[in-house]
Length: 147
Image (tube, rainbow, N blue to C red; front, top):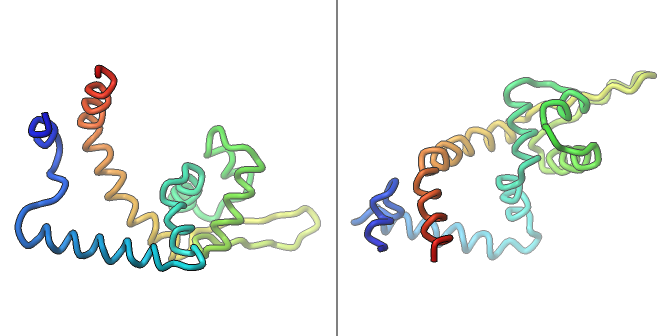
């Protein structure tokens, strides 16, 4: 059965020296994350799996700057409270910037920073891999559910 699963999609770990390099890089990343006493790296990594963080980064990458209400319209299902929390976290971590125009009628705009664009660029290959492997994921779920 494991052999059939390996035929779906791409190989997880290539053979030969390349596999050793992948293992070395993986061990280094795990070590760096484990030694992350203040949790900074894990906090940043959590943005990569957060629906709203990725949505904001994507929306600002496509069209920037945007106001709070414009972002909320683009992120279907997000509450005002969750969007505000997400924007604050992303701003705190340097992924977006916030510009307050200090006008009588409050006007604030958000834009993607260079760090935020870097995150967006790094996420694209992962997103594409997930899209490309979706049939393999569907088959795995089906096999699991039929047990």
